[in-house]
Image 1 (cartoon, rainbow, N blue to C red):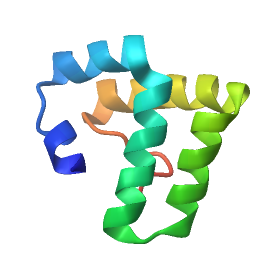
Image 2 (image 1 turned 180 degrees about the vertical axis):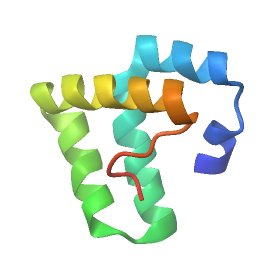
Image 3 (image 1 turned 45 degrees about the vertical axis):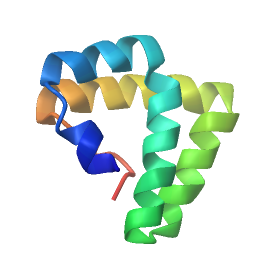
Image 4 (image 1 turned 90 degrees about the vertical axis):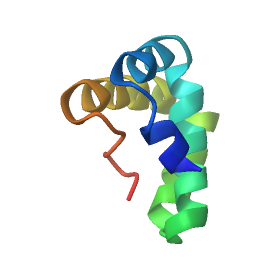
Length: 77
């Protein structure tokens, strides 16, 4: 499922991050956990969805990584 998100054009992903970034970041990490079974990715995904500060920080980090490397990379392995 994460491959479908990663295959979107860069401008679409940046716009999605601008408007729905905190939600997308958490869900992306939880789905990524299902694919990779990395428990840290699951914990971070849940924290991003639940905590307000985590949402904001992850939103900024994910937006920057989308712009620079065209995918969510920080704690999403």
